Image (cartoon, rainbow, N blue to C red; front, side, top):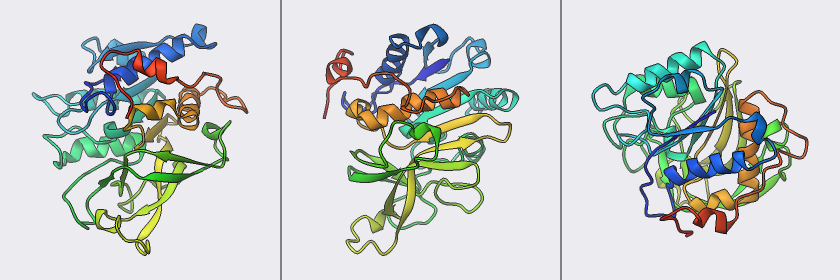
Length: 286
């Protein structure tokens, strides 16, 4: 298993990409499953490409756009094409966290079509912020609602979870997808955590919710070659990792993407405590 970490960028209580990668590694290695899980981690895309090529699961904790760990200034498609080849050749599991659901590009709001297409092939969708307002071609960010999340209890990743739970976070909506253009949705996609949410940015303030629709914030995706992927737009806040329902989903996602059976009551890895989260230098809880 390889965890690829990007820089932490939002002041200690959110977008803790570096610390989250280290936290995941530490929690897996301290768990009862440690002997069967070999965990490695790198800061940014590894120079030793065999780490990617030999991994049975790749977890990406990163910002997006020009700050994406899969980006490369000299050749924007270099790392993307390498990982794409690995995912097409192997059934490597893939988990993509929060803003890493954006594809590498020249900057925020810039679409790199080739990279976006590869991201859609991997996770069934891609975050693409175009501009403010109701532009139907734009994804958007909703800061910071407390959403009532519906859980798909038919999927193994939901083992040990309630049918609903609430989570205050920053969420992304109106993802660009194939074939109909919006919101992760196809026979290959399962909405693991979903909510009634605005269709466009301008609908956030619509109290009657006339133009709202059911959208995923955490989903699974089965790739064409049988490989398994999971993506989420939650986990903006560092403290989200201390939410037992979110963390249970994540722990289950590790097993599912590896092709392992998820126990009926869920993978038994304790939810991180506030003390554990704050044990990493420079972190804080909002």
